[in-house]
Image (cartoon, rainbow, N blue to C red; front, side, top):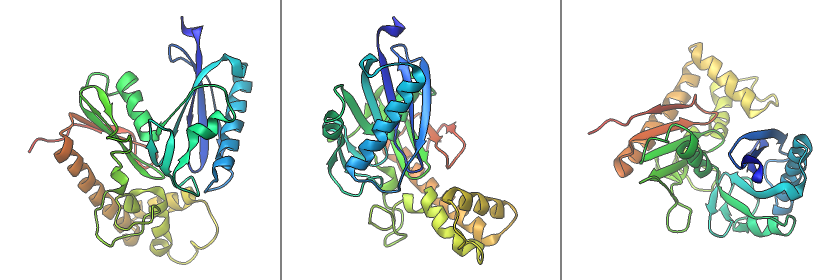
Length: 275
């Protein structure tokens, strides 16, 4: 029976957190969102935002905390699925933070924590474009660059649940600085923050006026469409590096399908060509 249990799904991100409440059949009964209060969080600060999000979704759905059987949380970064430890995330000020343990001190219910790209990949496997495929990849491009992979109808996570960090594979030795602290990562050329970082150089005087990264990206995109050479160069370079990243995915895993998703692109799918 669909109403035998209810679960909450949460996605944590850099600009806003979102949540849905579903029944046991996966029907969405309520959804909500809250803006993030800051760019980088301590674990207690992040738990405050998670708690506020849960309170909001319960109020909007008319459910009580006792009605919820479990919570699933997807977040960007390197996540140890088995332990619930966040080895690294740009959302957190410190490394190796155990989100599962922090959640358990506040809520008396099971919680499942995974990389957000992995959770999106599971959704594609169960409900989306991947339902008829045994081997496919999902690449997300937004505030970061993520990847999920299905092999033989199962989500692949690696030995410690921390694999497939496509955004932190290297495409340029000693290249652009990535927010992980290393240089030359694919994410440092494709992610929203990387493009916004280049906008001031491309757009010239006037872009030092305070504005959101999303506004900067929109201005950069409009200038590129209008023929601004510097703006076009940024997107062309990003496209080349994306091609390199996808080519490596094809050569390593030979997926039947690659799904591109996220705010950095219109969601689309394509069949990798055979060599």
